[in-house]
Length: 253
Ligand SMILES: Nc1ncnc2c1ncn2[C@@H]1O[C@H](COP(=O)(O)OP(=O)(O)OP(=O)(O)O)[C@@H](O)[C@H]1O
Ligand SMILES: [Mg+2]
Image (tube, rainbow, N blue to C red; front, side, top):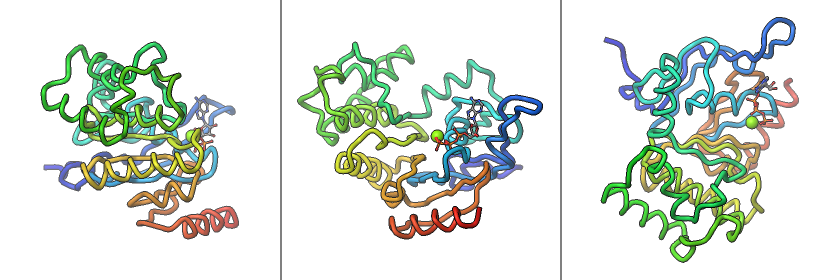
């Protein structure tokens, strides 16, 4: 019997993953034979120069994009074998998303935005899920903002709504692409502390793409990509250590 992703203590993994965009002379290799596991309950940061394949890797992990070669699993589901319908369902039910641009629905109030994943799934939150949403809303300081529309909120508040929405369904994996990219540094740190707490306190698995050494210093683990390959894999690091590693990579390339 094969050893499964869960047996390995992983929430997601990819094996010999390749992604090319375009064909012929215009082909771009975005990912080149990447084999890596994302550990369950950890906050993992993904770093690397612009164009190194960070977003591509994360999009494939989250079922937003398909691979050219190799395999990807979310839990024990091999997502590289799923058709579009089942991929959409997996994305809806098992992945939470936090983007740089918040991606809230402008016409819906805060509570409706947080409950959107349930709405899209065609159901109401259960009693347990309702309690979880209430807990998240309180913890994220959104209790007196539930009836507001996104444009009535600050950037940091909007990102907190997006985090509440990403966590509400208790997804296997939350993916965040530059979640602090549009925030000032103080607000950004608040958002990072919330993500950190979701991993430490709820065991939420999180994969976050970032360029920022300070953001990466909140993570349990930092993966470094360069030219579509994983070139380093570190445990908790200070911003200074992350900066030194990034500088070393620039010098080496
Ligand atoms: N839809 C696409 N069509 C063609 N090429 C693409 C597409 N998306 C990404 N690429 C290319 O694939 C490579 C990896 O892109 P990716 O967006 O994953 O990089 P990244 O590490 O996230 O960069 P950044 O830090 O700038 O966001 C780049 O060379 C990029 O130009
Ligand atoms: Mg990117």
